[in-house]
Image (cartoon, rainbow, N blue to C red; front, side, top):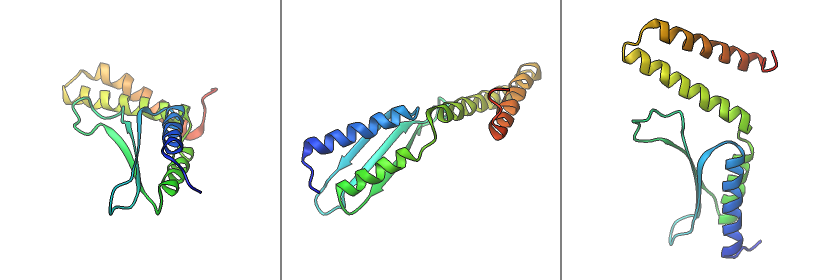
Length: 135
C-alpha cells in the first residue's frame, strides 16, 4: 500500500484524536521520514500526575518500523490498547492526589489535613481493585 502526504497527515490526525478519546491531555503525534534513518512515529502526551515543578511532564512512545505505514499501524494499535478514558482519568486523579499528599507531608502539614486525603486514596484504590464504582 502506498500513501501520499495527505493520507499520512490524516492518519497522524486520527491517532491524535484517538489519544484524546482515551483521555490523554495535549496529545502530539509526529511521523518522521529522514534520510538514512528508519521512519518513525513519536507519540507524546501530558503527564498530569507529574509534580508542577517537574522538568519532564510528558509521557511518550517512540515507534520505529520498516515503513511509515507500519509505524502508523503500530501507533494505532498502541493507542487502541490503552485503558479507557474513564480509567485514564481515574489514574490521573489518583496520581494528582498522591502528589498532593506527598506535598503536604513534605511541607509538614497537620495530619488532620493529610489523613482524610490518605483515607480517600485508600478507598479509591480499593474500589479500583474490586471495581466497586456503583457501591
